[in-house]
Length: 311
Ligand code: A3P
Image 1 (cartoon, rainbow, N blue to C red):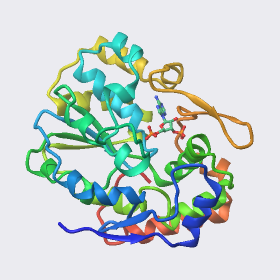
Image 2: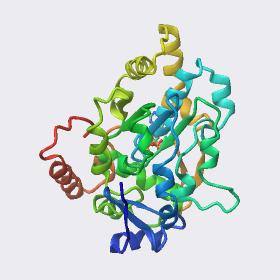
Image 3: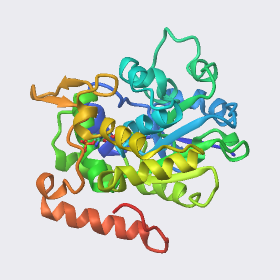
C-alpha cells in the first residue's frame, strides 16, 4: 500500500482554517486513496500506523466522527467489563478506550514520547477508538482480525452534529449552512463521508466486523446490546440488558462526566458534547434547498452501490 499526500488548497478548507481556533491549519493533507483530510504531521506516522501491531483480542470501535462513537464505546466497554458501571463512571472514557490516532492526526503534543506508544502498551484486551478510513488503518486488522464495531449514522445528522462539535471543540465562527456546504465538498477533517462509510460497508460480511447504526440504537437499544453482545461472544440476561440500556440512555450519558463535558462556543453559547442525540434534525437546522441538495449528493454517491444503511 502506498499513500499519496496532497496539500489541501480548497477554498472551503481555507474557510475552516480562518474560522476555527484549532484542528485546521495550512499545510494539512489529503491522504489518498480515500482522500481523508488530516493534519500535516500525519505524514510522518502513516506507515507506522499501517504497520501497527494488532492483537486478536483487541476491540476496535471505528466510525466517521459524530456517528455515535462515544455511545458505542460505552456499550462495548461495559459488555466486555461485566457491566462495571462504577469504574465506567469513575474513569474518563478516553482513558478506558483511547483514541488511536489523536496525536498523529489531530493534536500535536510535544510532551508525548511517541504518539502510538500509549496505545501499543495498553493493558490487554485493548479498547481502541479510531476515525481513520479503511485504507489508513493498520493492515493487521484484516489479517489478525480482532473484533471491530463500526457505527454509522445518517449523513445529515452527522453533518449537523459535526457543526456543533466544531463550535464546541474548535471555536468555529461560521454558520451551519456554510459548514454543511463544506461537509458536502469533503473538506472537513476526516474528509469525504461516503467513501468512509462505503469502504466499511463492503466489509460488513467479514466475521470480525459488526456494523451498527445510530438510528437502530435510538429505536431499540436493547436489540443492539443483544446483537453486539452476541458478536463479542458474551451473554447478558434480561436484567443486565435493562440495566445497560438505562446506563446508555441519553439523560444518563448527559449526566455522566466520564463521557460528557461542555464548553462555551464563539457566541457564548454553552454546548454539551452529549448534545441532543436525535434522529432527523435537518428540518429544524438547515435551509430546505440545502436539504434537497444534500439528498441529491447522497443519491449520487449511492448510485451503483447496494448500501441500505442509515440515510
Ligand atoms: P448530537 O450532536 O446530534 O447530539 P460521537 O461520539 O461519534 O462524537 O457522536 C456524538 C453524537 O452522539 C452527539 O450527537 C451525541 O449527542 C450523540 N450521543 C451520545 N450519546 C448518546 C446517547 N446516549 N443517546 C443518544 N445520542 C447520543
